[in-house]
Length: 88
Image: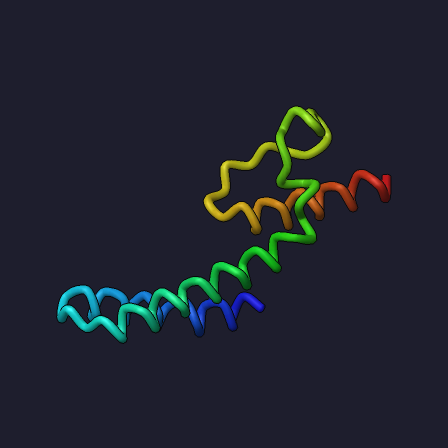
């Protein structure tokens, strides 16, 4: 799913910059649509981690605090930590 998001998002971003630079209106609309689709795919990926990505006060001290840039990778780390805790 992550590869599909990249395959849609990166060309859309390049097309967006080219369309803005060349003042190409139809390319701008296509690139905005591609960016929108890639953001929808990201939300689908994040949906299964919605509890872990919630407000920190809801599960204070339950998961480790990692300063990762990507919240999805951080949530996957939380899931691994949670599995380790449940196995012990």
